[in-house]
Length: 305
Image (cartoon, rainbow, N blue to C red; front, side):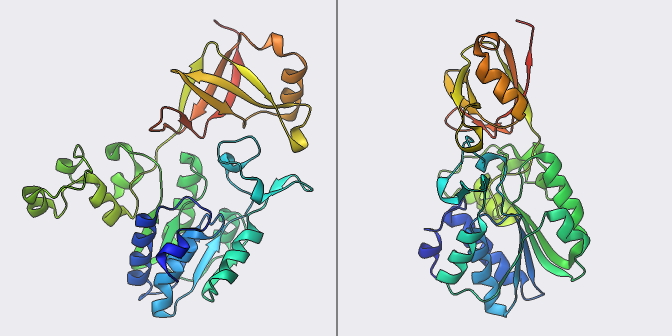
């Protein structure tokens, strides 16, 4: 498998992070097999398998293949290619299998289960666990608690995504980033003094090498918006109901499509005037570089103004 070919597969794994995964999987698969939590369409699994095959090891992938919150209908990363309109569900498994067959991968074993169910029945020691499932603090912590004890001594726990400020994250708690690197700029320059002291000249290079990701884990935040609410009709099972609300966050339009019950979707769509001036409370993961909100989820409407 060529790295450039894997990079063309549908997914959210940048090529430099994929290379880091391959490097780590090759290193730790000397000790045993590897397990991935959160597979989507198989892009990261291919990077991991590329390293593990060097040592004739297997990569087990755990995913219910129904998509995370952000993949659902009307959400930020909704993709029609992985949506089953007949069953009205996300289903990434067919594309995952297709990708494994395209690359003729023989050392990837899919486990189509919730992470908790798979962990409950897992008894084999693992050399490396890669967590990239649901991105909420609660889910990430559950994955950590379910799987960290399955890793052998000298193995690796690798966690992908989320937070740019290292001192606030979970990974920083277990493996702190040197203080002198936290405020550096990842501009490609190689400061000799920093290289001599830390082995790295910026926070980015250190994080990718030591955490196998540039981000860390953090909890959701909340935001309240007074006005600028718009309503969009849903599609599929939400046709004729609310699909999403659109709010103005500091001049950026943010679409929020999850967190609504079917009853509330119908109520809002039939009586939009009653909701247009209400305060809406939203939880979100972080502010993105373009000023939007990552994984926004509706919490409630409030009556205060």
